[in-house]
Image 1 (cartoon, helix red, strand yellow):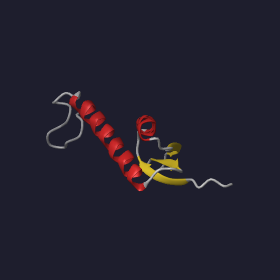
Image 2 (tube, rainbow, N blue to C red):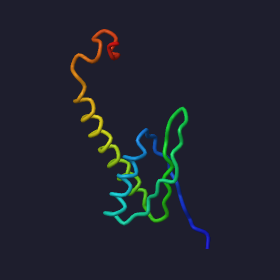
Image 3 (cartoon, rainbow, N blue to C red):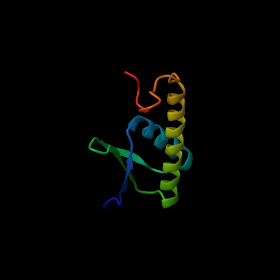
Amino acid sequence: MEQNKKEFNIITNQPYMLQQTIDWYNSIYKTDFELARFVRDEVNFAVVVYEKASDFDIFQLGANYGRQCEAFDKTFTSSIPPDYFDDKTKYPKE
């Protein structure tokens, strides 16, 4: 019998963080999401495969991953000194 695997892509530069979110989501909601591969291209993305998850599960996985990325970003940016960026150019000072 052939498996009925479906897949979707998630744009990300953090495959390790995505894998943590997938593991957490699968353990709680008993889904079977699996990080199949990570593609480094002009836009980096991960391919996630699944068989027994609903559209709602896909949405919830994405929402939880987004929350984790936002928390990581806030933690990272709060550790940057206030004078790190140039006020005029908005780029890091050299």
